[in-house]
Amino acid sequence: MESIAIQHLTFSYDGGQPILNDVSLELPLHTSIIFSGPIGSGKTTLLKVIAGLLPKYGGNCSGKVVIPHGQQIGMLFQDPAMQFTMDTPQHELEFTLENLQVPHEEIDKQVKSALTFVGLEKLAQQKLTTLSGGQLQRVALAITIAMKAEIILLDEPFSSIDEANRQFLLQKLTQLQNERGTTIIISDHDLHNYQKFSQLVVQFHNSEATLLSPHDSSTLLNNADHQHSTNLITKIPPLTANVVMKLKDYAVSRNQTPLINPTSFNIIQNKVTLLTGPSGAGKSTLLKSIAKLAPYQGEITYKGQNIKKIFPGKYYSKVGLIFQETNQQFLNVTVGEELMLSIKNGRNPFLTQKTTKELLSMVGLPDISQRIIYSLSGGQRKLIQNLVMLIMGQEILLMDEPFAGLDHNSLQRLLLLIEQSKHHFPQTILIVSHQLDHLAGIVDYHLSLTNRQLSYQGGTQNESQR
Ligand SMILES: Nc1ncnc2c1ncn2[C@@H]1O[C@H](COP(=O)(O)OP(=O)(O)OP(=O)(O)O)[C@@H](O)[C@H]1O
Ligand SMILES: [Mg+2]
Image (cartoon, rainbow, N blue to C red):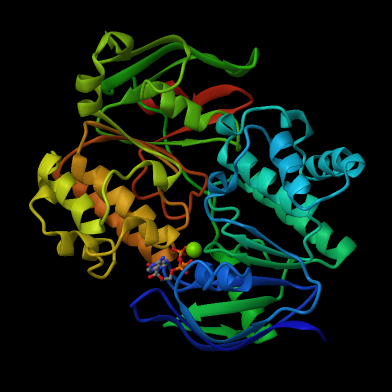
């Protein structure tokens, strides 16, 4: 059977230890393969080597990667927004196909069919900057489909999208595989629901990558299905709870269509509230409204004062936002500099008294103070982003997908850190997360955004008052 052959591949970034050490793998064509392993274990690196981006754009490599002749490769990056250059999905697709010198009369047809395949035809003309994380993933997938890539590499395509979208995309990928015989490689931390999609798992560990036997692959995927839980039992906030923010008749519309219908609700002080809802429903928009970064109708008050009347300087000393895309967050260059800056300006005494090394080890990272932030792996960057925000210690913390791309151990450590920090230094935390695994311990309340309505999950108000 034809395959992508990786032969004795050793790869290191400039001057560093090998990230992949003497890796040999035969990845059969026309199958679906999963890359699994802890954060920083080299999954993205190997995908980029297969895609031909490394060592072309950095690093040193020995050994060989042999791609069967004529196989076109398309790659979806961990951060989909980074790979777009145009303003709308339509233009982005046209641009890609023009670059590939697809005849003009063909372009329109291919663009339409790719957008329809991923269910995005209605959003073809919408600005990419206004699309949700899940929608951006669909655009990226549409591009590889339009390119007619025979090999598609997807780097954590589902890390910030909801279950329904994950299912949808997995089903589309399976369809693509069946209809076109596309070879699909996905790197992911969350292995639930993959059993129908693939029986081949490559496990990354200690600079090595091994193709698991069908039996071991299936056991791993099976376990992931069993461990996956979406159960979260919360109560609705009691009427007596301390309110820190009030949203009154809050509503958002986009291009004249309502996204969130007028609702009024409170955010409870010094509690952790989880906000869930389908991709594109408006969760990030809600966080941005609260952060005064997106327009809305109605009124938002912070301790009784309309937030529109609070000076930005004062407001942002009270409210901090973790963006969904980690790249928007960082001002500095190395991890050490970034952490030192937060320690200097931060208000969370539980964390500002610690050294950078201690802080890193609290989230399970080695002393990577000297590393340039942009060179970190996706999961490592996410951990630094969370650390920085916790150190800053604003009264209210808005976190948009803070757990995306973390492996099980990193997630556990981060949750423990949030819990400890909360204990020493209470904060109001509003978390948008599509993944509910393991959150039961830290979440107090659960706001759900469905069918344009926002509501607290749990018993009735009367019940929780009793
Ligand atoms: N440009 C770079 N320069 C130096 N080191 C790098 C660079 N890019 C990645 N690394 C390091 O190489 C290791 C592997 O990174 P890689 O991005 O391949 O991991 P990953 O398995 O994809 O992790 P994640 O699950 O967090 O996405 C990490 O320790 C990372 O910090
Ligand atoms: Mg990665």
